[in-house]
Image (tube, rainbow, N blue to C red; front, side, top):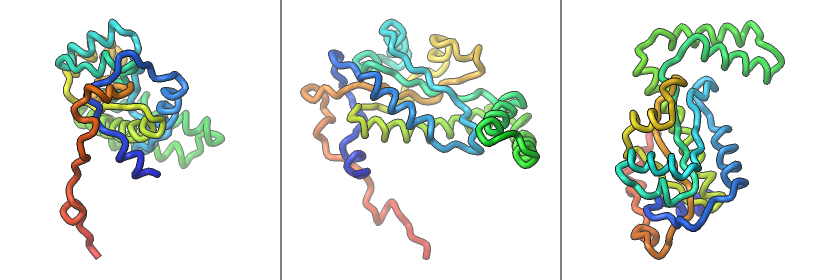
Length: 210
């Protein structure tokens, strides 16, 4: 079943602008994304779910005219924390305590230790670490989209600074790291739709160390 989903999905190049992903399917994708694992459970990112056509058109321009942003019906913009701060890690600590019956000494010590490792470190290094966590969630979202028979195209080909400006992310301490348009493939006009999936041979990709 899992491999069937992975074989079905592909980076859709042409989406059908007449079709809209139902909100219940989008919700299922977002719920799966929310459950993705992250380092120390920090979830150091936010996801903008963009449906507004005018804003998606502006985002498309900032993504070098890639049409999936306008031909699809939703664009997920993954925006990572620009840095780790005491306040942000305290928020994660308190959320953990609320979910697990209180902030115990063990929980408090764990997050104080985490602050000692992350807070005050080079901000770009911390952003890159946070962005890696967003990419884990991206992978889960892509698989969830396939399970919902929704097409998705992961993209790094865009101007992050322009995305941040359009969506007002810098004011929130966020920086765009990756995006995921959602929609339905235009099977008649997408040159990639029936192309064989190309992956490296197992003997090349995997090395067993026994």
